Image 1 (cartoon, helix red, strand yellow):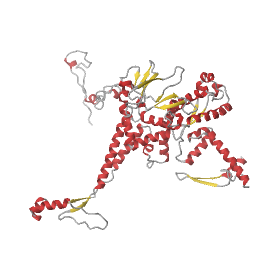
Image 2: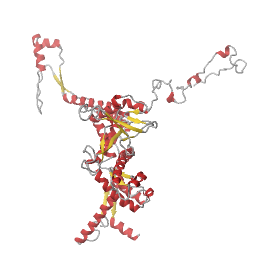
Image 3: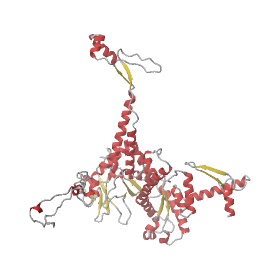
Length: 559
């Protein structure tokens, strides 16, 4: 490469020319090197450029979260509901969310703040057992639901499914005496679509999507429609179709009248946003792709061969005569043959049968569809393997890493359900139980003075399960041996309560000892340890672990 010629850009005198000093100062010459070094964008941040060709047409407006969401919320929810009704992957994703976040049951373990209440651990243990038994009497019956349909566990699963589809949950705590239940507190689940401005009113500074707020953004009241806006049976009649009711957020004495929970993405957001929002367009395109591919495959399967002839019209006239052409065409149109094994197929004169061979496997289409599903899974915060139930393309380490990432998301969703639904319901029930004298050592005055301390509880959801039971059980034991975790934490990770597990094991051990004495068996024969058996376990990656329980016990005694 040749060097650029040396050019003297200064005046003839060798010193720079002053501004406005004659014709020489009016001429601007840009060197080639300087021209090639000019930046592509005119701003310090490329994200703010209006000159770059790939950014010039990208000029979004900066608007508030409510301005961006509320006017489009009904459309987004309607499209999400349509996908869940008609697309198996979307429906399965919602069910996967519910099964992993909630599971079949939710266990409540009362855990009052003993430091704030001035109590000891022994009192907490006994008190929690009594309160848990009272809670089960309320949560396990259908009287929990004002519609007499669901108990607490079923209602929690339904609220989690509403979170997965609409991004928010809504319920009304009611006080309904004389309905056959020992408790007057019950819950009415409400579809978030019923939360809206009365008669289609425009949003205002204090009314946002049916939610009435004060100057600080706190909820003051909720405007809830008597029936679902899409319910064709609710436009008239006893359920008051087309009528809204303004329900205050709190009673004058501080009891919640509305339960509304969602996870805001931006400050000042008044309503929840469906999780499918960011990937709804791609999800619908994937739905179109799979439907059209299936239709094409079915059409290809219906055509097995094509009958063709090399003769043109002139050849037909020469061979069969002009008056035979129409008869020949009619015979070809009426040609039918029954396909069966070993059959000789008679063909019309001058024709041959060519088998129809569709295109080969669509490997590129499969890779593209997988890429789309991975993109959709990222938008839903769930890995591809979990959404599509396809673990054939991964190994143990990759599958475990993907599931751990998913569980981080599920844990955050559980916290939202615990704080926004479970703990609120527990607090409402606890208040009634205190005023009815069902809670030991807690009078109404004590409760209202330390409400948060009395109503703390741990919520245990579905267990995580094991990818490789041997490895993960060994890891749990190692964590406990090194004091990095507790039996309660390990049991809760599997959806169990440590105290229940220990009590059940104690009953089993006592029963084993009783049977050994009854049948004259040596001590320890029926126990899982100390019987001298050699146990060989094969893990999923081919590793083998052999243990001799007697040797271990003898070694432990010697130590």
